[in-house]
Image (cartoon, rainbow over all chains, first blue to last red; front, side, top):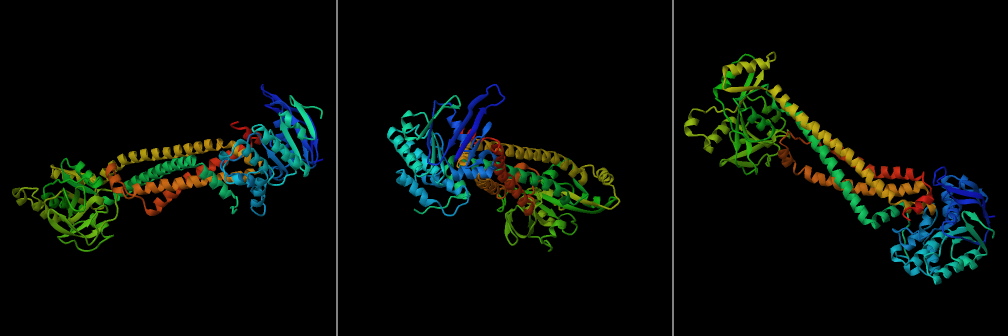
Length: 222
Length: 401
C-alpha cells in the first residue's frame, strides 16, 4: 500500500474554548494507480486531511504511513524531501510564487534539493503538455486563473512524484478547463501515479475510480 | 531555451528585483539610518577628539589679556572668531620680571576682514619667534625654518599650501608651512612674525598715526610659562596686582572651565548618538520583521514544495543582506560626502572644538555603522525563520486567505 491513513484526527485549538474537530478518526488506504476523489461541503475537513497526508500539518491522533514510513516520525529534512520528491501537492487557489515566471515556478521544486541538471527540459515538456509552452516566460499575474492552475498542476509533477494530492483543483476554472484537468489526472493515474482529489464538484466524480464522502470530519463508506 | 540555474542567489535577487518598490524603500530606510548613525558617531567622536586635544594646544600656563577680554581670547582660541584687542606693550617686560615667571612672549591678534584665501574673516596671530614657546612647539612638526617678515604659517583650514602667496591689506605674504588639524580656532588662523603683524596694522589704517606712534609694541596677549615650583594662582594674582588693567587667566582653570562646558555638550551628543543607534536598530528590526511577516504565505508555499527551513533561511538572509548592505553603503557614502568636504562649515556651525578623529578611527566608525546596519536585516530574518519553525506549514499557506 502506498498510503495508509490510520485513525487520524486533527483538532484545532485543542484545550481552548474554540476547540474544533476538523478530522475525526479517519482511516484510508491508497494504492498505486488509484484515482480517489474526496467530496463534501466546504469545511468538512478535506483540506485538513490532505495537509496531514502531505506532511504539512501534524495529526492530533493516529498515524499516516507513506511507503510504510510514518511520515510524522521523520525529521525535518526527510519530511522536506518527501514533500519535494514523493508527493506532488496542488493547493487551493493557484499557489504560484508571484516573483518567478511560469517556467521558473514549474522547475522551482527541482532546485530545492540537490539534483544534477537544470530541469529545463522537463519543465518545458510539462508546460507543453498542458498547452502553456507559449506562456513560459509570463509571470503569474500575467496568466488567467485557469492557466495559473495548470502551471500549479505541472509544478506538482516536476519531480515525478508517486502521489499527486490536489485540493479543489477545479474550483476557479471554467467547465472546459475542468474536464481537461480531470482527463489529465486520469492519464496520470493510468501511468501509475496515485491521484487524490478533494472537490465539492459532483460533475467530476466520474473520473475517479474511488469516491469518498466526508462530513463533519468523518469519512463515509466508499 | 537557455535558462540559468535557480540557486539561492537567483531566487533572492529575483525577489528583490520583482518587489522593486519594497526593496527600494527598504534600501532608503537602511540608508537613512546608516547615514544618521555614522554622522552622529563621527560628530561625537570629533567633538570628543577636539576637547581632548584642546588643552595640549594652548601651551602657556598663564595668559594675560586686557581686562574684560577673556571672552575674546576664548573666541580666538576655540571658535576662530577673529578678534582684535590690545593691552599695553610694557606689560610684557613687567610680567617677565614677576617672580615665578620663567618665560613670557607676546602675541598680537588681528582680525582680517578680507583675504583671497578665505570667504570669511581670518584671525592673524603675530608672535615673536625669538621668545615664543607656544606656537613653535607644534609648528616644529611641519616646519623648522626662521620666520621672515613676509612669511606666514597657515592653519589647516586655510585654503593655501606651502609655496602659495596670500595678500593681506595689499601686501603679499609667502606661505611657508601649514599646520596639522587642532580642532580649535588655530585651524582658521594665520601665524606671522609679530613685527610684520605690527606693520600690517599700521598699513591697514586700523589705528590712528598718533596711536601707533606710541604703540610700537602692540600686544594682544602675553603668554606666560611658569617656573616649576611656581603657583599659577599666586603668579596671576601678582600680575593683576601689578597691572590692574589686565586679566591674568590661568590656562588650566580656563581650559578646565571650557572643557567642563564642552564635556556636558559632548555627553549630550553621545547620549543622542546612543539613542539614535538604539532607535535605528529597533526600527530596522521592526520593519524587517513586518516585511517578513507579510511573506508568510510565500514561505509556506516554498516549504510545501519541499524547501527546508535552512534553505529558506539562506534565501531570506541573502535577500536582507543585499538590501541592508546596499542601504548601508549608500547611507555611509552620503554621510562621507557631507562630513568630510564640509567639515569646516560643520565646525563653524557648531562653534566648538571639532577635530575629525584619525583615518583609522573613522574607518572603525564606518565599519561599526556598516556592520550594525547590515546585520539587522539578516538577524531579523533569522529570528523570523526561527519563529516560523514553530508554526505549522498549513497555517502559513492559509495566511492572507
